[in-house]
Image (cartoon, rainbow, N blue to C red; front, side):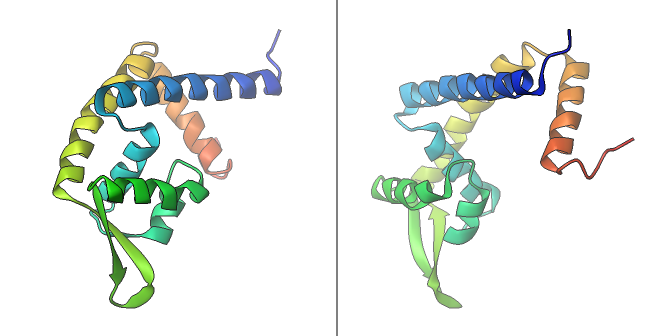
Length: 147
């Protein structure tokens, strides 16, 4: 019969967890850096850095409470730099260093390959388009794409 909504939810969560665990392990093995570290480097890069700490925390794919800890770790490793916003002294700006930019680029190559291997190899183009449509609708709270 038709799967229950709880079964579907549990499969979604299990797939996400196993996929991200695999990607995290691969990044740690290759670079000694976590998927959380990569997410921070990627978000700073995507913002065309620097980015305000508050904005970074909002965009992160990790819990907001982890943001300061991860940025501190990356700062200590020389991958990001922190400074105060001249317009608002309370705001902390985070930017990639030259080393951080180079590491992000190398990690992105491996991470993208992992995504292709995990998602691309299992789903054909139509399945990916269907999944993308469904996920966009879920993320929009069901407000868009209703036909």
